[in-house]
Image (cartoon, rainbow, N blue to C red; front, side, top):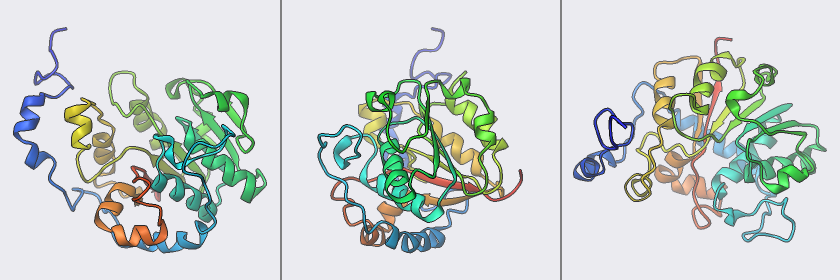
Amino acid sequence: MIFPPGHYHSPIPDRADLIQRQDRIWALREELAGVDMRVSAQLDLLERLRPQVASIDYPVEAPAASDCYFYGNGMFPVLDAEFLYGALCLWQPRRVVEVGSGYSSLVMADVNRRLFGNAIDITCVEPYPRDFLRSGVDGITRLVPSRLEETDPALFAQLEAGDLLFIDSSHVSKAGSDVNYLFFEILPRLKQGVHVHLHDIFLPDEYPKAWVLDEERSWTEQYLLHAFLMNNPQWQVNWMAHYMLSRHRAAVSSVFPRCPALGAGGSFWMQRVGGA
């Protein structure tokens, strides 16, 4: 290794330097430079979701059935799950392609099964599927057990306006990564009107301090996302879970009353509104 972790040429930051500058690095930010966060539109969307989420009835602990979502899963928290539930009901996509599957898949399957009679075509792309996905889940149309960067691009080309690309990636931009493939090969080719979700996004803030300093995660996806959206009129922000809960808690909790008592969220939703 030519450049050890912490070297200025290494993608792994210098922990001592971060600690020294932590007050500035983890200061809350109210703007995302070059990006319209559309906060008023996000608050309006909350109200449109209110009637859609009134019937949510998921358990807190794991139920006997392994193919049922529960809030205490530790991977896909309450705010993200309930927003996904409401968004599917509101937007009514014909197709969903999910890359990085798990408990979010169970929410989609439940909505598809109970509310849409399995009319939504849902494809899960997951190279390391959980047992319940391998066994088949009622409401999931098909499982593609491959890496994103090895998936046929035609799968994403079929998405039309109103459809959904749901991404929960490795979160790391590096040589040959799924994140690079997403931003450089898939997103630029999506059709106008397609909704896109990314997970574990904390913009306009930094990744959580505990993740960086204690767990030493060197995730980079949200930096690439910010650069992608800067001065880019072809895309609009629709929902920023972390920002909205941390700055507009009362409004969020009035629609999602289990939040933040049962957890928070890190979903980021955007939509292509121009171009292709």
